[in-house]
Image 1: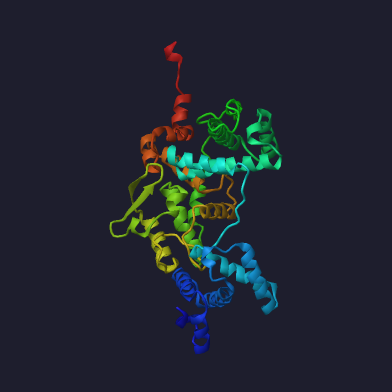
Image 2 (image 1 turned 90 degrees about the vertical axis):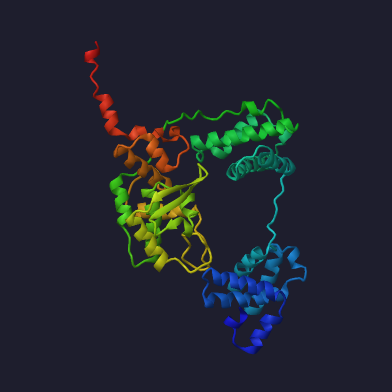
Length: 407
């Protein structure tokens, strides 16, 4: 890799003989595979050469931010500029993370041991999903941090202490749904703590969140006419618009979840057979859909002209080097940006709004709830019942029913 970047024999010898040459070369090749330009690779190779020359021989045991800042200060003194210091950090930290040598600062809580045991219990004994473990750990850790900040001990907590947490932290910030979720997470955590003798066994049962009624809300779907505007508003001379239009079509036409779109693989698109295979996250199984000509055209235009040349098998990638798979959270920005640009008013502007719009359109076309649930990848029809509220045709039939003949 060094030979592709450096032609001067003396410079090439410096790169070859400096410490951690194999590790630097492997990382540069990784960046090249993900679309980094030659100019970017030259900057990275220069900064990594300086960094490797100042790392301790035992750097593989771990490098933290304090050590990296110390080396960066040396870089700043030689280059006479604050930008040189920041550039070394920006280049060096991803390299150290790539090698597994980076050590994040660990903020230990007084009840950290209890929290770690709780996480292990959720994961190993209860078999909770990774998402549930992450969310409940996060809420529990925030609560424990607040307890330490306000000088409250877990063993001495009283119901009014939990109330104070919701009042001080949630006022003006948490909606009813968030309060209910956090209350459930804290109740589960404190129940575990009670079994371990860490808090009063009566404390968890005093936590009450707001009542959330099933099917209490309406789908927050934009009108299908607005969805058509979203799908047709694109500048085919712009790479971002070409990629985003393919994503928006998958969300609106197939009603895919954002994680299903972000996780779509190249081999799931059968161009010759005109078939799209999607791994449904809730059902945990593959489903096959016909690849509509308009969607096939949008995907082909993106893959052939815009998608970076990379070893990754995920369809949707970032457009700036180093190119990497597009995360599910990035899809919110894509949908929100398009809705705002067109001035479309909606209660929510994320990917799920287009999924709701897809379901509302299927309801208007007369499909049954079972058919709509199958299209959306629901595990049961109970998850699809909310869309019966927007079946205006059927609701009008109920409203126009004449009871006079029954009297």
